[in-house]
Structures are given as C-alpha cells and as structure tokens.
Length: 400
Image (cartoon, rainbow, N blue to C red; front, side, top):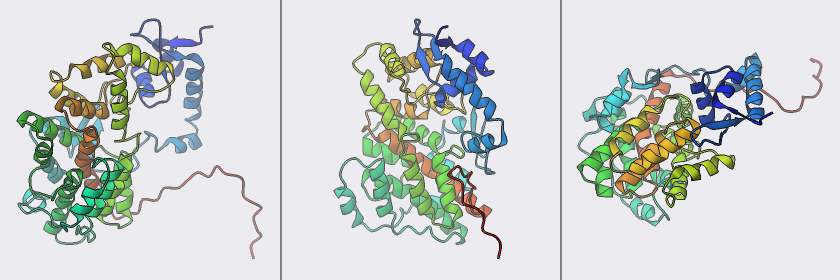
C-alpha cells in the first residue's frame, strides 16, 4: 500500500473538504509532502489516519475542553473585531476598506471610542529625555525583545494606571502609549506626527512608501483574541495599567509562532534568494518535515485578507513575492499570511530587516489597548480552570 495519499483521499479520510484539509496544514496538524508533480502535494497515510482518530476523540467532552483554546469556540464577548466569512471588521467596519484611506490614529479612535483630538492632540506625550541615552546604548536594532525593553524605559512615566480618570485624560494616555512605542522603535523623542509619517521619516520613504506603511499599520491594528491580545486582556483584567497591558502584548508578540514569525519568514526568504525558481527549495523544506512559515491561517482558508491587501500594494515593486506565494500554494494549498506580507513590504521598500516586526508591534498596540479598555469596562477577572493530568493524589483524609 502506498504510504502517502493525495489531497482528495486525505480529505475523504478526514471527512472534511479540501479547503479544511489545507487549513489543517496551515495549523501544523498535518504536513504536506512533495509529490512527483510539484503542483500536487501528498500526505502521509499514517499521519492522516492518526489525525482522523484525534478528531473522533475530540468529540468527547474532555477532549473538547482540552482544545477549547486552540482555535476553538470564542471564550470572551467583544464589540471590537469580527472575523466572519473570511472578512475582517473593526466595530462593524470592513478593515480592508478602512485601510484604503484611514490612518492608524483613525482606527485607534474607532476601536477606543474616543475623540481624535483628545487621544492624538498636537502635544507629544511627556517623557524624560535622559532615557534616550539609555535607549541609544542598547545593542542591536530596536525591535523584538529589545523593543520591549526600550518601550518600558521610555514609557516609564506614562500616566495610564488610573482607569477611572476623566475620559479625555484616559484617551490622551492611550494615544501617548502608541507615540511612545514609535519613539522606542526609532530611539527618538516622541512626536505628534501620525505613526506612518514617523516611520516614513525614520526610513526615508517617499509618499507611496509612506502610504503602504499606513495601510499595513491599519491592517495590523486588531485581530480578535490572538495570543498577544488575549495576554493584554488578561493583564488588564487584574487591574494593571494600560502600559503593563502593552508590555505584555509585546512579550507575547515576540514569539516565533506570533509576530516573531516575521523573523522566520526572513530566514526562509534569504535561503531562497540564490534560486531563480523557489519551488525546488521549498520542496526540500517540506521533504525535511519542516513547515513553511508565513503561509496559511485557520481563519482565512482562502487567504488572509490583510496579506492580500498589502501584497496588492507592492506587487509591481517585488515580483519575487508573487513567485514564492505561487510556489507555496502549488505545494501546500496555503496562501500568504500577514507575516509573509509584512516581510514582502519590508523588502519592497528597502527597510531594515526587523522592520516587519516593528510595523506589526506598532499597529497591534492599538488593539492591545482596545482589548484592555474593553476588559476593564467588563470588570471581570480572567481566570480559566485547568484539567489536571498529573499523578493521582493520595487518599482523602477523613473529615474532622
């Protein structure tokens, strides 16, 4: 018996559509293998059978509980973001349509439900200029783990601990955090300029480049209960400050399975730079059992709408992005995610290598603050229960 099966047979064994099969691949539940025809992936028969059995076990109450937080049912109510029928909405407004003209500040005010003049006035947030000496002394680029340290120092005096202040003061504190994060990214004093123009000035972009950055920031702003937003929300539920929620979001975002995936995409892309046709190199990656980062999203089986919008902006500037995306789709059926799109944008505009992560963090800071505000308004403490799977406890002591 052949040890591998086609996509059609794998879908039949699992009792799902081929689109759902591709979603399983994107989630790492099953690995696509290169076949004789590079356009047609194969799947290990044993792995498919094992996954089918896991799906059957997953219908039992205990198994359902185990997977409830793994792309499972929503665990919290929200008025912020809806992902439905592979479209993304911010408070009922289509995010892709919004990104055509809105700035990150516009989206922030929509999500936070505050006045723009209150949140993003003409005066930049106050901070101690002496911290710039410390920031400048930090080794390496101002992104990933170092960005968290820089932000914590620059935002040390941010007034975000009191949640029940007057509305205008809370709004100013929220906007100040976004501006302080931009300052931490570039190691400069915070300014009142829109975020995309601060990026354009630091990276010396033309008007078209600045507009592409603006759109990417908007599309990164919020995305329901992803790992970093859920982290920020948990922190906020304890009564911690808005600054603490943003720091927690940054920490979660830095992981390689979240925003840090942009670094993995960079490594992938560098490995393909010397190959005119990316397909053979991608096939070798799959044959080794490794996954291809930056492709596939469980919530968008037909393709991440954020990535589509960003890639449409840079298609002519960077044809290589389209070639890699086509080759990956032929091999796995997966489409580019936001991580791949941000790296493509970074390359198309000639930005520093960690700029993709920086854009993700700056844009998503708006969502972390929105999640924190909503959770605090709800007033409940997020405290899930665990299913104990350790050794059995000793005999019960008799009641006294």
